[in-house]
Amino acid sequence: MRHRAAFLAAIVATVVLACGGGGTPAPTEEAAKSLLQMDLVPSSTPGSVLTNGQAIADYLSKEVGVPVKAVVPTSYAAVVEDLTSNNADIGWSGAVAYVAARNRGGAEAVTVSQRCVPDLVSPTLPSPCTPQSSYPSIIICRSDVAYTGALNDPARLTQLKGKRMAFGDPISGSSSIWPKYYLKKAGVDPDHDFSKVVSISSQSAIALAVYNGTVDCGAMFGDARQGGPFRTAPDIFSKTKAVFNAPQMVPGDPQYVRKKLNSKQKAKVAAAMLKLGTDPSMKATLLALYSIAGMGPAHDSDYNIIQSFADTVKPGILGEVVASPSPVPSPSPSK
Image (cartoon, rainbow, N blue to C red):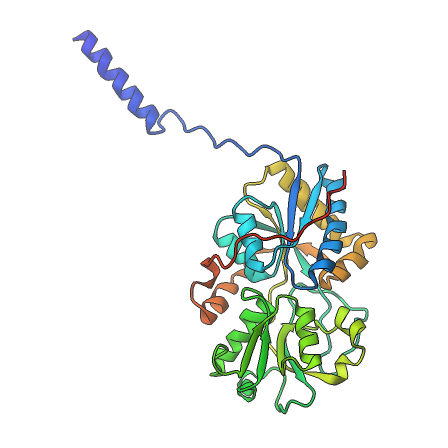
């Protein structure tokens, strides 16, 4: 009997340990990486994004202590795919792409872009302002396109039916999700009620497409006509006009890290991002990258609105894998 009791006790002990009664070991943390990859969305000219992105990568490298490589994938969805597939460690994108990555358990926002809100009635080049995180989603048209009504009145959007229209990347907040949300609310089908629909990832290119007459109207962040488009076409503000300014602003573009990144490296990246956003020596680079005037701490609750806007445009769009990673060649990281 004593042997049987000992045998049963051994079985019970084994079961208890197997079920966690003896304590489940904590998951082993990922080791620190010797090189970090930073993905940036191609919302401007990819070559310009890569040049300025690598300058930022070099800055972060000095702060974090390991080389950082800048990569510009071909779409916003490819950035999401990279972050959630452990191919990239740091991401720069719009709010919608971030929420798609967050929903897949792959990203944590650390900082948020801050921009100057432009005067759409009397547009000018950027002037001194107090940067803020949220920013406008606007629709511009060529000046000769007939359109009447208040800028912030979605009901007036029915006037755009039959026009040639340009949207941005399918999961861009300002140039796709936001304008399509308000178009649908106004009874305009963004897929069928225009005579032509094109998708252009670069919002600067959208502005120039309207200016050049390739399309009649285009959706973008406000005001993508500044910067590169203005330098290319100094009369762009007289040849185009803003016809719609979304009543609800888009949550600021976040900078985020891969969720499973080594915790010490994650903390270093977050600190480096905050420093980057306030460093006077990087001001021109951030402005040239994505018209960023500053960066502050991100608050994840600011992005809760994204899901309802995205589901109205296309239910389930945030869960779709629209593209696989396809980066353009990047320069070698600084050592």
